[in-house]
Image (cartoon, rainbow, N blue to C red):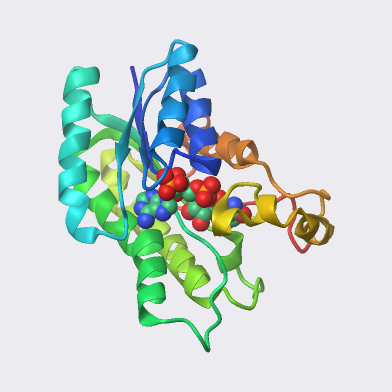
Length: 252
Ligand SMILES: NC(=O)c1ccc[n+]([C@@H]2O[C@H](COP(=O)([O-])OP(=O)(O)OC[C@H]3O[C@@H](n4cnc5c(N)ncnc54)[C@H](OP(=O)(O)O)[C@@H]3O)[C@@H](O)[C@H]2O)c1
């Protein structure tokens, strides 16, 4: 059985990705940070459909804790998957929300930087010995880091996502010798509980956002999950080092 690690599987895009991969018979290790019971729900849904999955705690803001997390992943692979390697890694977990340049504190800046860039960067590095040759990595970036997408309040968030976009080609080049492909999806506005659950708390924001999207609606988690799944699969065997926008045509 192939095995995937999907960070941030207790909600949104990560949860939808975990469910999508499990539907295809892939074993899933997923993570939660503060919502353990939602992480457990993801696992229960997968197991109810006959899949195999487990959920581990992970805080990407705690860079010093990454080695312990990797040890836990190694242990889960040994216990549940007979010591198999990870075929797929999805660096999805993240935090969002506006923080104006004039007001952002160094602590807030560091949180964006750690959770969205430094954490995934060193997590991926530490996982390299556990990754199978000919496997695949997908990072979840953001359309906010694409050219001409300037939104007030997103300088620290978009800069961290832009860094993740930038390393995509470098990782792809350095890992190509092992046959490992690396791509990034850059979602546009997607209905998840990002930004303190803003889409649920302020649904009146949605029509205005949808107006700026060619296909006329905001994204659903499954829209991104299906593309992530494609980029992990052999159907995308000739795609590596790319940043792929998944936004329904934002600002076209
Ligand atoms: N939704 C959008 O409009 C949108 C657009 C562009 C890009 N994205 C990106 O898509 C990815 C998934 O976000 P989402 O929209 O699905 O958001 P979400 O519904 O809020 O889910 C975020 C996930 O990340 C986990 N997480 C939060 N802080 C973490 C930390 N410090 N360490 C480890 N895990 C942490 C959460 O765990 P707990 O809930 O257990 O704390 C949750 O599983 C993020 O990288 C986000 O930046 C989202």
